[in-house]
Image (cartoon, rainbow, N blue to C red; front, side, top):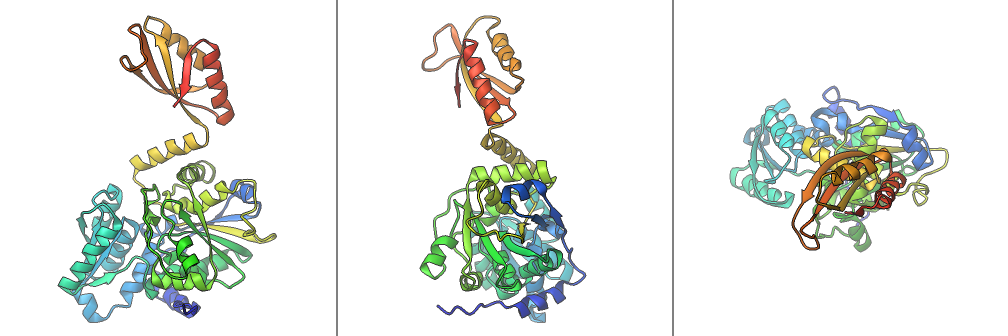
Length: 409
């Protein structure tokens, strides 16, 4: 394939002129906690603090600003799980363009409501983003609207690349940039903006990692994705435009698990005081996943690591689940099932045993009938918050030593 990048530094510089004065220059924050894990100075590029809560508005605004007067008159249509939807809606309102956005039926309510609040008409339906894209393309063809792709367009990639220009100015000694990656627009834009000696590392959910197989094959390849909490980067096929840029840079790809993602969201809230959605925390998830190691030679001694926090639009209900999942992955959440004699005082004895090792009981549930239970027995599910893996083991051992038949669930 032709290795010439389809997006250049000049494209990114022109995109910055379009965005001048319209969007935030998002801050860069230091983090001693994550720097210690990474083994290098580490900075957080806070794109979750951008207008609409993610970097997506950069590319959307550049793309819409480049439309002809006739295209603006006919309006635009987009498809997204949430962040691109909000970016397009905000940019369209700013430029006086009518916008329709297709979203999956189960899109997060805050993202749907935010998109509507920016003035776009939202159409819900289908289970996947790909379903929304198909409907949006059909509407564009039927009504003469311009389809605004979330990542596969030169203007969109160039707009996202302005993040890279800001990083160079804010962190002059940057050596490595970790970027959450789905279709690849943000990673490709940053790669086009920064010099060759700055490593751009694409981080994907292991449940939706299309870039590894695609780079190995030499062309964008579709994969079968499975459900991931990082819905913002759950893309089955890289975009042709971003793939061309990232392939030319010989970009490294790291994948992270669901446990890594949830622990990253939790750690960012606790240690950096940043509320970030799971997709936006993928870079920190990679740091956590490689705790105690160098990032496979990707961290250059004497140079800083920058982790892009790409979005912060997360449903509070989802955030609660992610926090709970993260605490469990970090060994700070213990779920026990205990068989008790069904007589007064048994539950008190169990709770007293847990209290003796200074663990906090969160919930208690009774199961009075079931396989393996005698007529005079009950099973009790107890959810406990602990201080970590070692404390969780101590709690379990102490409860068993107190005479209770306890198993971890």
